[in-house]
Length: 113
Length: 176
Image 1: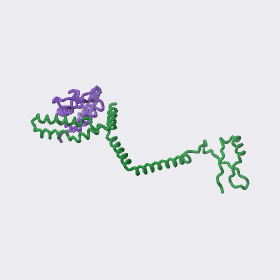
Image 2 (image 1 turned 90 degrees about the horizontal axis):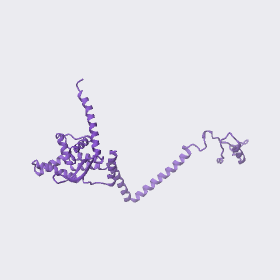
Image 3 (image 1 turned 120 degrees about the horizontal axis):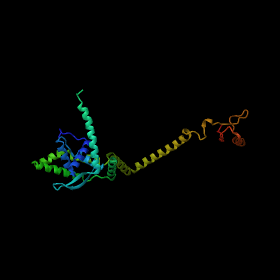
Image 4 (image 1 turned 90 degrees about the vertical axis):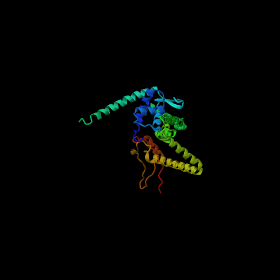
């Protein structure tokens, strides 16, 4: 566990929104698995990180939740993106792209003098 | 806007004292699914459970972190302190009465003293421009200071002397 990176709260929200957009309604376990897989198992999501982030997104109205049945017929809480969530996803993606592009310019010129 | 929405929900949860909104069930389902996956990968149930528990990073910690986000922890502890102090006050009625009485007396005497100081020291005298205030007396020959004006003189002065803005009679200071 120790070699895996912790996730920053801000980026986790974006990952969750993006994953929900891709997968559609999904329960916490599915989200965690998918995020870990997408990161190439470089990220480890423990409950104490994932669920408060989901709750925050739900309180902010970006996602909503309802109880349903998982593929194994287990009772689970499913999360899905709201309209506000889709807008937030677009906005956050744009901001993130901008930030990384700026940073890439700095890091790219490193050593070129 | 979204932050405000989140804040209102958290405030509501704190005031209403929401402590269980099915999070325990949600965690249990998550853990069970993780264990199932381990068993599908060929682990023994015990081993699958052990690994799932390691991965989850502590159920109690998750509950704490979730509770912190559910409500407003600062306000929650404030309310808890308030409830505790009210309970102790009810429990020790005599102490409470003495405390309330002394606080009341303290506030009362402070207010009285302050209103006196404010009226006579801090605020200028209610005479228009206090710098132009004059005190007038009559001095007879070989008389001690200071004799007040007889009423008719004062009355005439007030009516006729145009150099004064106004005039007022003052009781004579006690002199012995």
